[in-house]
Length: 79
Image 1: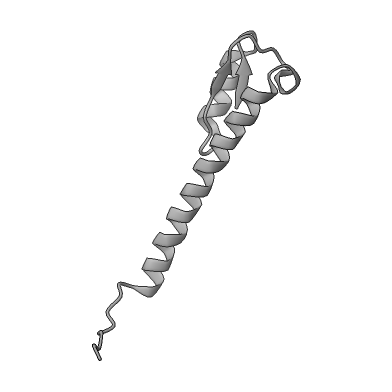
Image 2 (image 1 turned 30 degrees about the vertical axis):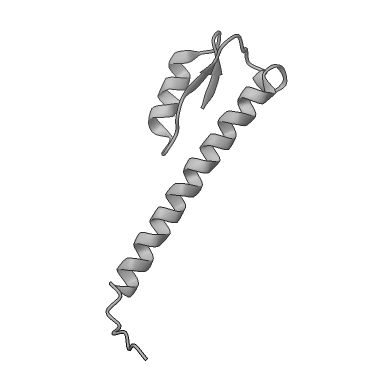
C-alpha cells in the first residue's frame, strides 16, 4: 500500500493492517497519481515487494519439500 504525503493516511494504514504481507510506505511530495509523478520511487518499492514475496515463496516451498520428503537419510557409499 503506497501513499503520498497528502493522501488518506488513516485509510492506507488500515489497508496495510488487513492485507496479508502488506507494507505501508510514504513517498515524500507525492499525491494520488504518484505512478506518473514519482515513477522511479514507486517502481523501486514494487521491486522490493516482489523480491520479499519471492524470498518468502522460496522459503515456504523449501519447508514443504522438507516436510514431505523428510530429512535426507540415504547412506553414502565411497568408491
